[in-house]
Length: 203
Image: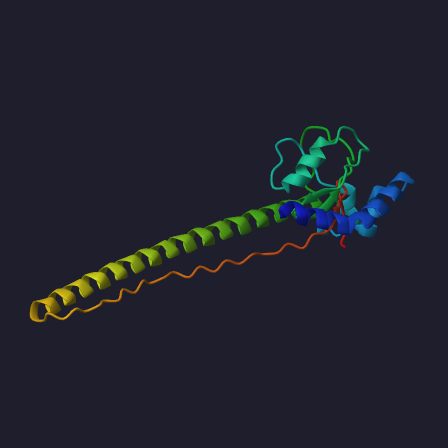
């Protein structure tokens, strides 16, 4: 099912991907194509496109599909095949090597760091909410079990009292307190990503 959805996304974007790849083959500047086709907010300015995304082996916080494809590029000037990730379909361009040492804290890099930290906070809040919900559900379930047990004990005591004064047969109904669980699926809208280290295209 997931593979079928991924294929459908790639198929829907293939004409645009082919158009971008043909322009690259004809000598178009990658950053110009990012400006024309891109949907990545980090690549929406000339400064962002010029800086690209600075990656190394220990970099964290990026979409794994994007990161792995970027790190697989072998030399400056290489362009990846289309890669489907969490934020769209990426075409990634190996811009340049950066010498080791301190990196200038540009506005673009600040924005990247801010986005990474924001994503980490969102994930932390989500995980906390799920943990709290799970704990609350378990408590409700335990309370429901206790209620059932108490109800059954009360019914048994009543039956014993009835049997003590009557020879009639009484049927007791047991009610189970069920727990309703509602699951919501969050749908993802795929974009094709062309950044300075990748290209995003919106279908």
